[in-house]
Image 1: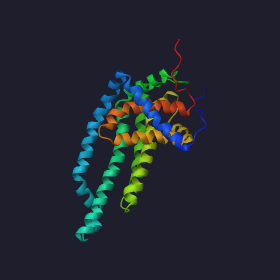
Image 2: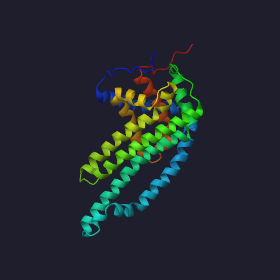
Image 3: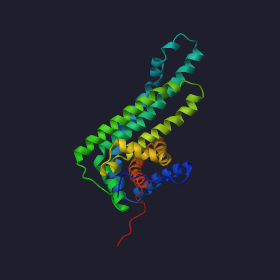
Image 4: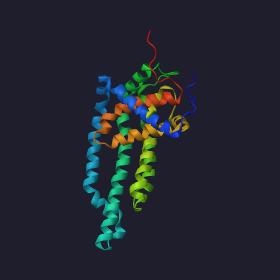
Length: 266
């Protein structure tokens, strides 16, 4: 089977978006039914989660000072407009910090837990018939590629975060449109990160991921945005990470036209 073949979307964009959300729910169900997978997946996410929670707590603690640092033009304003601008700056800093934190959390956790998440992804694929055209992926080579690709995606997310931070100063738009745009961008980057393992097993790299996921963008975004929203919930990233890896294996199979129903057993 040609593993680079992409299925043609059939349902409406809204239907495909929610089918992507459903893939995360299916990943969660698979994960909940497999205690060993739960233990494999939680530890790396827990370690990374403690580190990132501490970093975000530090951001919250110093956010007033940082807001003043990025708004020196307001130093001579009267108290009310100065405070208003700095509250908006603080909210923008927390929002962008959350966005970058979620994306970097995923990248770091995937690197730290590479052997664990590779095993989860592989088991999910075996459950549904295996990986067509599977190639040998040496551990160190896989880890190196994972680190390089994750750094690229994190760099892109930081570059995108800068204009979002600036847009956060716009009244109303900064508090409504910007968070939605951030969730969509964050969901896209998360989807690209999470499908890394199943794509590597097929001999496909980051450019292939972009091309394949873009072919069914609503499904990819439905999955990624659902993961992004779950990651914003306290402890959500730690608990959902293994389910997201399982769901990413299902997303890969669906978009490549491979079965996501359990293989018949003799």
